[in-house]
Amino acid sequence: MTGDDELEESESGTTLPDGGAAGADDVALDPWGSSSVSDYRKLFEEFGIEEFDEILEDVPHPHYLMRRGVIFGHRGYEPVADAMRNDEPAAVLSGFMPTGDPHIGHKLVFDEIVWHQQRGADAYALIADLEANAARGMSWAEIDEHARSYLLSLLALGFDPEEGTLYRQSTNREVQDLAFELGAEANFSEFQAIYGFDGETDVSHMQSVVTQMADILYPQLEEPKPTVIPVGPDQDPHVRLARDLAERMRFFKVSDAYASFELEPNERALVAERYDQLDPEAFDDDQLRCVHVAETLEETPLSELDVDAGTLESTLRKLNEAGMEPIRPRTRFFDRRATDEAFEALIDAIDGEKRVYESHVDAFEIDLAEAEELAREVEVDNGGYGFRPPSSIYHRFMTGLTGGKMSSSIPASHISLLDDPETGYDKVKSATTGGRETAEEQREKGGRADECPVYELYAYLLAGDDDEFAKLVYDECVGGERLCGDCKEQAAQLMKEFLADHQEKREEVADLLEAADIELESPRRR
Ligand code: TRP
Ligand code: SF4
Image (tube, rainbow, N blue to C red; front, side, top):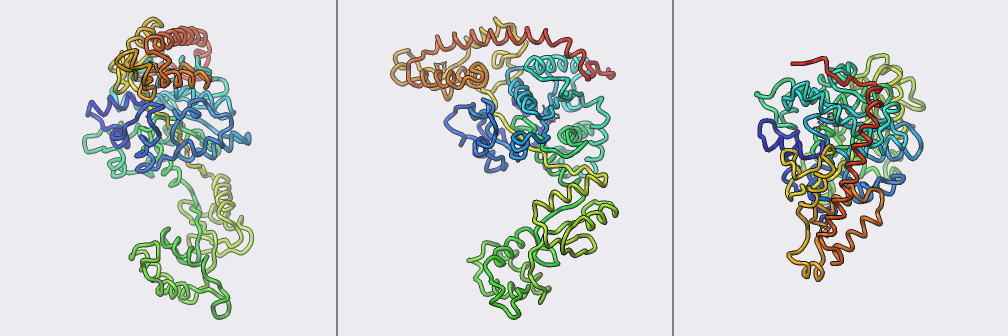
């Protein structure tokens, strides 16, 4: 979803915004071009979303939304970029709650799906009808009407329904089965913590969450593959939970280890650091043993170690208990939820020296990356999914044309893809701008393109792939050569053309949609 829906949801107060939206709401989700990405810092710092800029170079022929920083963040997008670069399998999936007419915010997501599809990814778009019914109380008739409209716009923007997959949640049996299975890995306390659900929350609403988890993992049902979920940052809690559940479904967990016993990640980091510093030749019989590491740690003041006292203490205890056991780096495979056969198959598949324990195997000649691959292979061969953690990309929310937030409940604040071209023209003409009080002042100081919803329209949509044009508008604005009247006239004209063109295309793809493999009418009516 694209923001406005979420905002309405939080305003209504009936349902909590889906999770981190509560946090994201505190963050000023400023438009593209606003002072800098630092406005989004909270999303990076508090939520751990990664900056898209840092991986832009790795993306082959990035989309203009990526180049212009509209797509500002991601989680784990690298494998998707790599797969597209190397012509390996990848997938893209996003979902739409059919609660109203599709608008220019949804267009960002439609474009993102189409772009990945054109670069060889398996593309999926779904209608979140169960969610719309459960979380928004939409009737099935309303849902059907809007669903068709979303799909027409998606196809009009270039989605190929023969290559890609369209579905609605309510009629996708595989998704529902997967949702049920994933539900066994999640519990109410977790939903409470993530989404603020409480004793009053409908069970169907909770079910729509596991359904979304299944949507996100659906492209990997046949085989694991890098998958990107393009969404607004309000959906990040869903993405995080899906990444978690994907992990929890895995048969094996792979990690580094140094000895037969288990260390917590921070304890392991401490031992790893020591191991790298110490030279086995400095010890009797050239063997670095657990007690030796314990001794050197005991001699080091806590202030020089990058850990808390508790971690140091527990590490020391484990090392001392192991006593003379040699420290030897290895890769450990934990049996998490594998069948006995799968665990046996894994043991057989490990080359070189290995040690088998009750519920883990240590391999001494396989590095972590190889081990990950092997674990996934054995899992898939033995009936598991072998899910890769799904990736996401996040786009900025558009500012409303009337200033403030873009909201579907304020028609003048946004442009629907179904707006009459003249209406679109008028809305742009009456939009607020980043302009100055007077023409003189504007010529002297320049306009504030960074705070201008009209400039945003150019950058997000009207300039299309033409970076030079977007830059020209920007430079002329801030340089004082462009005045708002003319600028809006040009934007309004372009919007009118875009809408006319888009609506014509919607008509052209109507047959394509009829032929597509998706049920346009829900069998449900109540
Ligand atoms: N929850 C999304 C929204 O509010 C819709 C959705 C359902 C979705 N399933 C999804 C989005 C899977 C991305 C991926 O609009
Ligand atoms: Fe916005 Fe255009 Fe005015 Fe600049 S000139 S502030 S971009 S409307």
